[in-house]
Image 1 (spheres, rainbow, N blue to C red):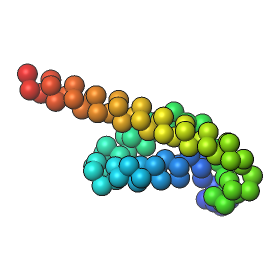
Image 2: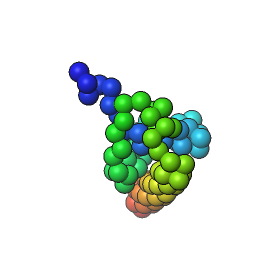
Image 3: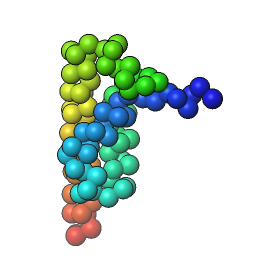
Image 4: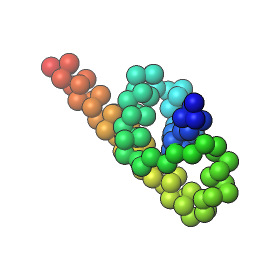
Length: 94
C-alpha cells in the first residue's frame, strides 16, 4: 500500500529534537507519548515519502522555520506537562 511509505516530516524533526534534549533518557514513556501528541498537534502536517526529499525540495529558510516551530512546540508542551505534574503533585499533598 502506498500510504505505508508516507510520513509526516515533523515527526522526524520532533524525534530528533527530543533526543537532542535527552528527554528520551530522562522522561518515562507516558510523558513522551503525551509530549509527542501535544507537540504534533501544534504543528502543521508536512507529508513526504523520503526524508531526503526535504534536502532537494525545501529551501534552507523553510527548513529553519520548521525547526524553529518544533523548538517552540516542544518547549510549550514541556512547560504545560511539567506545570500539570506540579499541580497534580500539590493536590495530592493536600
